[in-house]
Image (cartoon, rainbow, N blue to C red):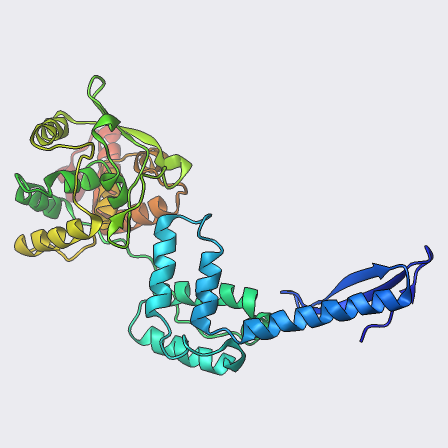
Length: 360
C-alpha cells in the first residue's frame, strides 16, 4: 500500500502507481488529504478501483474489446469506416476472437496474423491488426505494450499499382453500356471522377441545368440493408463542381424524365458492383473494381496533360498521394507518349521532321 508523505502545506499526499504509458514510463496519480490516514485510505480505494477495472477488462474477449472500442467511436467516425470496422470484427482473426484478453500472448496473436495473411491482402491484414492494437491499448495496455516492444511481424505492404483501363478499353466500355441502367453510374465515375457513394448520393437538385454543371457535395452508403442518411462530403476537397458535357447532360435529362424521386440513381453500391462485373465480363474487359474507374479517369487526365493539382481538385482528392501514384503509373506505362511530345517540341524548334531525325 502507498505510504503518505506530509507536504509543506500540512496536507498528506500519496502517489498511486497506475501502470505504464505507451512510452514505457510509469504513471502515478496523486491523492491528497488533510490527514495521513485519509490520504492512505483514498489511495487504497484508488488502487482497488484501478485493479478491478484492469481485471474486468482482461476478462473481456478480443471480440468484446474490439466491439467496445468501436462503440465508443461510433459518433465520431464515418458510416463507411464504421461498417469497415464491423466487417473486420466479423471476419478477421477467427482463432483468437473468442479468447479472453488475459489469455492472449504475442505468440498467439502472431499466429493469428500469419493465418490471416495466408488468404488476405497485406493491406487488409494491416488494417485488421491496427484496429485490434487500438482496442488493446484501451482495454489491455500491458499486452499492447508487449506487442509494440516485441514487434508482430506483418506481411510486407505491396506497392500501390492502380488498375486502369487503357483508351481502347475505355472506348469498349462506353460503347457497351449505351442504353444500360448502368450507363449513367459508369459515366459519372469514368468521365466525372465520382465515387460510388457520391453517385448514390446524387440528387437531381444537384444539377445546375442553367450553367451545365454538377455539384458533388454528399454521399449515401449502406448500413446493413438500408441506406444511411445523406451525409456530407468525405473531405472538404470532395465538395466540388464539375462541368457537364452535352452528351452527359442529354443522358441525365433523359434519365430524369423516365424516373421518379429525388435520386439520380436508385441502385445500391452492391447492385452497381454486380452489374458492373457482368458488363466487364460480357465485353471481355479486365476485372477491375468500380472504384478503379476513378483511377482510369485520373490516368486519362494524365495522358491529356492535365496538371496534377487541377486533376486532384476535379477528383476531390484531399492529398496528392493518389494523383502522384496514378500519374506516375500512367507515365511509366505510356512513356513513349511523353517521349513523342518532347521530341515533337524539339523537332519543331529545330525545323526537322520525325523521319529526318531517324535518318540522321
